[in-house]
Length: 229
Image 1 (cartoon, rainbow, N blue to C red):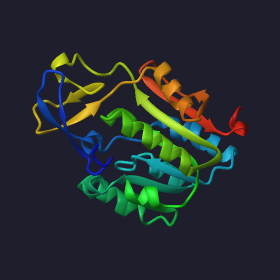
Image 2 (image 1 turned 90 degrees about the horizontal axis):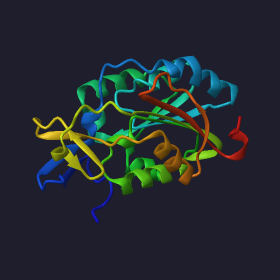
Image 3 (image 1 turned 135 degrees about the horizontal axis):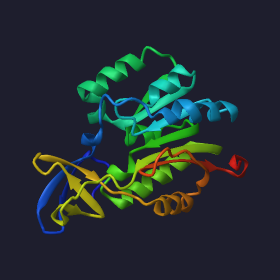
Image 4 (image 1 turned 180 degrees about the vertical axis):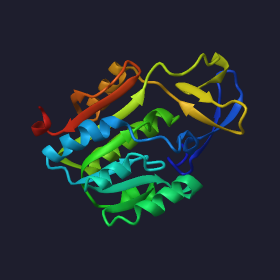
């Protein structure tokens, strides 16, 4: 098997034997505001629990990093080097670097080699854009290793928002999007049950649901017995 995460580009074969290239960095929706749940619930909860250091895994254009920095948290944004080089992401990174509580790690090498431990992690709209299940699982394993005991993980995703995608666009366990583009994006929707089962298998127990509507999946998970509330 090829080295995992050697590139954000994946050459894959669809169910009907068509060759496609997935670019996982193409899934970032630049310009979107942060999810208001972060400001209304998560930041307050993190403060209550004494969280200081947060890793924003798959940070993209930093839309969830900025509210945390403003609230006084130390935030480390993790991304592919190619993602940080995109104009919108590069602009956001330059702005964030004015804050002394901001840092970055390039995925995967720098992240794997860094020895810091974090009190909490953001995993917002990330795993469902990764086309290889082995990589999703290893990402969770590495992320758990980076988190302290009695820490938290915020999961955000959506379910039931994929339009009527033809079966010809099935690839791996999901679908590729934007068929007209040379580089496609990937979506794999997880049911609520699948999400909880996946997180539990890596030692994260569900603390509470913060979802606002049926299509949203916003869950707070804990690592360690004292995170039960």
